Image (tube, rainbow, N blue to C red; front, side, top):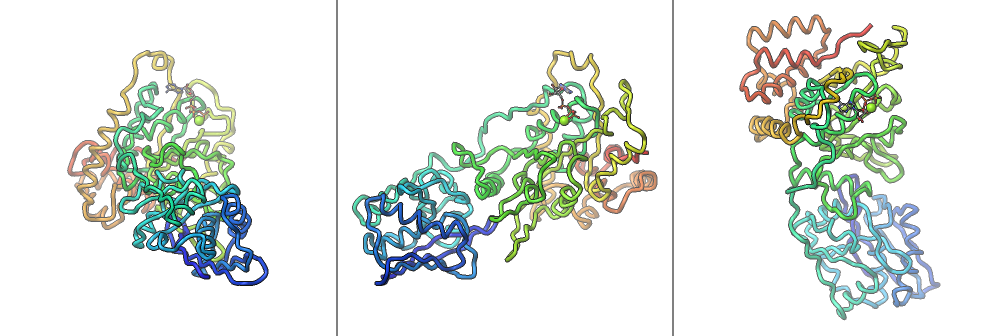
Length: 507
Ligand SMILES: Nc1ncnc2c1ncn2[C@@H]1O[C@H](COP(=O)(O)OP(=O)(O)OP(=O)(O)O)[C@@H](O)[C@H]1O
Ligand SMILES: [Mg+2]
C-alpha cells in the first residue's frame, strides 16, 4: 500500500514542502530512500526501524520504498524520521490516513521511539502555515517554539507510540495550548549597564548616536580603557525589538540550533562577539548544512569585533558586502541561500601593537612603521563603512574612584527610542527603518544643508580626504544627531559633530 505524508525542508530561513511517499510491496525485506537524501536522511532507516519496533509496533517484513519529493531538492538532516515512520505505519495498515489530512509531520526519532529536539521548527511551521497546512506534529520539546506561529494547530509528540494511538483513533493527542501570545513585555533586565562605566562620556555619546541611527562604530584606545565594557553595554540602550523582529531573530537561532530550551522567543537583541580566530564560514555562514554565521546571529543586534586588527584580512573583507546589503549570500555547490544580516557593527582596537600609541602617561614602544602597519591591517573600504570612529583614552583615577553611578542605560534608551520614532515617521510607507539605511535619493530628500553647513562639509571633505561614501555617511550621521536633538533640519552643530566622528589619518 502507498502512504503520502506532508513534511517540510528548510532552505536558509525559508521552507519548502516535502512529500514523503512510502510504498510497501511484497519482496525481500528492505528499506530504500530515494529523492536526494543526504547521509543523515539515509541514517533515518536505522532510527525509524528501531523506533517503530521499540514502540511496540510491527516493522513490515516486505520491500519498503521511501520517496522524498520533489526529487531535485536536496534533503538534509534528521527531521524526516517522523514522517517516514508515520508513512510506514499507514502503509502497513497499523494507523489510518484520516488523521494526516491537512497535517504535516517533522521531527527526529531516537531509537526508543521518543522524539528529539529538532532544529528549524519555527521557520518550518511558519512556512507550513503560509501553505495552508492546518495541523503540525512536532517533538513535544519544540511545541512552545512551534506555537509562536499563530493560526496553526500544534500537536506535541513525545513518543512515536503515542502518535500511533492518536492516528489509530484510540487515544487522541491534545493540541498544545501556549501560555500566552508572544509578547515583548518585560524581558529580563540586561546584565550590562552604562551606569557602571566611569568617565568616557564622549564615547557613551558616540554609542548613543550609533544606537539611535543604527550606525557602525570603531573604538580605538589603550588596554583597559573600557572598550569591551562599553561595547557589551550597547544592547542595553538599543530600542526593544518588535514581535516581528523577535520572530525573525528566533528563526535564525532555530535554524542554527541555538534556541535556549526554556525561552522559545528571543526577546533581547543579540550581542555576538566572535573570537578573532573565527573562520570565514563561522562568520558568514556555510558548512555542509548551511548554518547562519555570526553576522546572521547578530541580526537586529550587535556584532562586536574586539581586537579588530587580529582578525584575518580575508575574514574582514567578507564583511564589506553584508554591511551594505544587510544580508549575506551563502553559496553552496547546488544553490545559494540568503540569510539576513542586519547588524550594528561595533569594533574595538588598540592604536598600535603595544597599545599605548598616543597615551599621555605610558610611552609607546612601537616604531612609527609598526604603528602604521598595524593600522593598515584594516582595509580602507572597511573603515569607510564605519560611520563613527571614536578614541577611548585611559580613565583618570578621580573618575574611576568616584562612587557615583553614571547615567543609567534606561535613560539613554529613552532618547534613542525617541530618535527612532522620528525616523519611523520619516520613513513610514518605505522599506527603510533607520537613518543608516538611507540611499542617495533619501539623503537628498531628508538631509538638506544650509549654506553654512555646505561650506563646512566642503572644507571637511578636502581636509579629511573623504570619499563619496563617506560624504553620504556624514550626512546620515548628522541626520541622526539632529533626530536625537529633536531638530527637523540638520544644523551646523549636528554636522560638526558628525564630521568629528570621521577617522583621522595616522602617520
Ligand atoms: N571606564 C571604566 N569604568 C569602569 N571600569 C572600567 C573602565 N574602564 C575599564 N574598567 C575596568 O577595566 C576592565 C577592563 O576593561 P576593558 O576590558 O573594557 O578594557 P579594553 O579597553 O577592552 O582593553 P583591551 O584593549 O586590553 O581589550 C573592566 O572590566 C573594568 O573592570
Ligand atoms: Mg578589550
